[in-house]
Length: 142
Image (cartoon, rainbow, N blue to C red):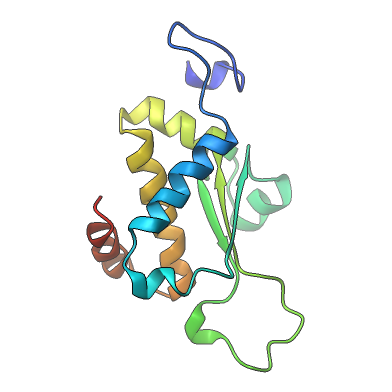
C-alpha cells in the first residue's frame, strides 16, 4: 500500500517528510557520531534524492528502486592518495522514497532508520566492516 501513495500525498496525519526533513535527520545523525569520524566528513557531500536513477540501479544489479535507501560513492579514506587529482568529491546519497517506504513497512522511527542508513554509508567512507559499522551505530546512540 505504501508504494501506491505519491510523494507529498496527504493522509490523515499530514504530508510525508520532504527532502529537507530527511536531510535534517541525517545531519543530526552526523552530529551524534564520535568526533574522530565527524572531522573526516567535512568534504563528503550529502544529497537527498527521491530514488536512485536507472544507471545506478543497473550498476548495482537492483531492479526495484525501493530496495536502495542509501549509497556511498567515492574511495574509502584508506585507499586515497595524494595523487588523486581531479576526483569527484565523496558523496552519500539518501533516497527519500525508499526510506519512507521502509519506515512505513517496518514501524521503525524515521530518525532511527535515517541514522542507520547514514551510518552504514559513512562506514563505507571509512572502509569499515559490518561489525565496525554496528559499533559505530552504537556509539552514535542508535
